[in-house]
Amino acid sequence: MLVRKLRRTPLFIFHKEHGRLGEYAGFEMPLWYKSPLLEHMSVRNNVGIFDVSHMGRLLITGSEATFLLNRILTNNCARIKIMECQHAFFCNDLGGVIDDVLVFRLDKNVFFMVVNAVNREKDLVWIDKNKDGLDVEIKDLTDKVPMIAVQGPKAPQTLRKIFSSDINKLSHLQCSWFHHDGDKFLVSRTGYTGEDGFEIFIFKDCSEEDALNLWNAILEAGKEFKIEPCGLAARDTLRLEAGFCLYGNELDEETTPIEAGLNFGVKFDERDFIGKDVLLRQMKEGVSRTRVGLRMIGRGIPRKGMKILKENEEIGFVTSGTLSPILRTGIAMGYIPPKYASLGTKLNISIRGRLSEAEVVKFPFYDKNRYGRKRKTEI
Image (cartoon, rainbow, N blue to C red):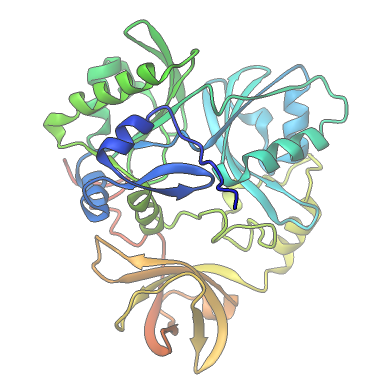
């Protein structure tokens, strides 16, 4: 019997010594270190650091790079200012999501893209398939450019000690080049936790020692702010509380961005991008199902695949579910017909054969005045 060898990030030595390891997207990654709950709350209240080097990182350059990306992405890359980024989707001819991506414009004809780990190889094939002899070069930098996320209300204070106070000049969805100990880093004010935060890309011929030096420097800088290393378990509960989609759960090639309620990543302009006709028709005519947030009123924790019912009739299914560390109750996302999607609608989720009541609520699940990037409370 052949045993598949899992890939490892440059920070694996730290994860092996301190974390509980598991497989994700072909990588051996930390699921948690001390506990998922502790790590989740550290990001909500203070600051946490994540190794996200398993994500795919692609560099797309050439005189026709913008033309190519505007053919295969739902958003308009020509509108991205240099050193800014935007969310977009690769869609198939039927509007289904091949992947959801983050696109950075580093120069006029230089684009840097972060894609989902499970889709990296598929994305490369899709881009190459649609290249059609254009003057475009595609490089896979996944193994060459480690990626670290620092998230939470104390993230700016932490990274200010690494990169200077200039870190505070970055606005959401902006990026810039910074230096530390002679090395060059791309730092963006982005993340997938709902909180303020940054993602750091080490642009050099990076060794394990280089990655560990930066990781440990951030941990040291964040000590006074109670920083915690965080694993994939906390990353998942954080994104779910924020109402963010996960590919393979809320998004797949049978689901469109319009059904998922992610219209912000689709621009209907003069471009003729792949999947445009279907998505435009859905915008005009409506969809047969839509993504909603569900907060449990009854007992139980909803999980992926559980049935959603209205008056004992199955109307949809859960795509992600967990016990919210903030709310201390079950929360879920799922797809149901729009006629049941009004806020406050009472539905049932079948949890281990028992119907438990839930209510349709808006995203994010938490109080935005107390938590999240736009919180109004002082930290």
